[in-house]
Amino acid sequence: MTQLPTSTTRKLGLVIDLDTCVGCHACVIACKGWNTENYGAPLSDQDPYGAAPSGTFLNRVHSYEITPKTGPAQLVHFPKSCLHCEDAPCVTVCPTGASYKRVDDGIVLVNETDCIGCGLCAWACPYGAREMDKAAGVMKKCTLCVDRIYNENLPEIDREPACVRTCPAGARHFGDLGDPGSDVSQLVATRGGIDLMPEMGTKPVNKYLPPRPRDTWEQTDILAPFLTPVSETPQGFLGWLDRALDRL
Image (tube, rainbow, N blue to C red; front, side):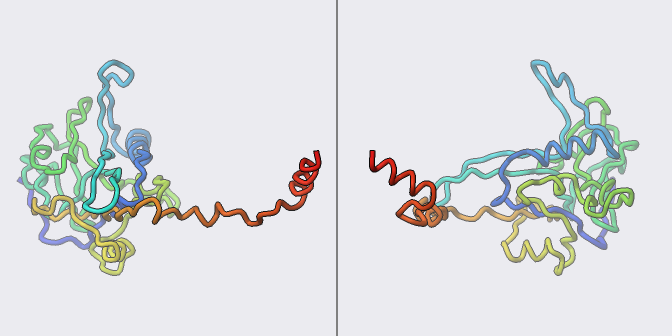
């Protein structure tokens, strides 16, 4: 069995804002595209245009309707991938050592040459973040795009996970959650970031920012001031036209 490091130099991970995510699935497509078409290991699909398509994805988005104790119902879009846990059960259960956690940045990876596809890591992961690639016969998972974040062939602005780089709503953030002064750590502290299923004791590095409560429509009608006419009397050409039509 693989041993976990007692500590890591950094804790690279994601902060996902559930208040901002619009469920567009751009992160899913970017992840699939980058890992299939660029530096990453291909993510296979089976019968993609048939009656029962299936495929390997490292990031998925689920949508739920929730009803808070106060306020109207909300639709929450919930992206989910590997959380790169500090106490990762997928690592300690691996019989070949294929799953491991890196000391320098805390990223959990799979050495596919050592993976025998037994699926024990998938059983151990409480988040369902592991997927069997049927074509390759090995387990695959989010890598935080290690082939991007350290890739000097890419412009510096692109050296972040593909899902973060592509998110049109700015709902995904990447950085060192082991550094209290980092942007992501400050964001977690300000917004009250939470762990996913903390009762499992895995200590996930990735954090979620909870959705803000929604008020009633009357209280959130922020467009109302802009809908009030600037002038009750039409001016310019429209004013002339209005007066001309009045004389008919």
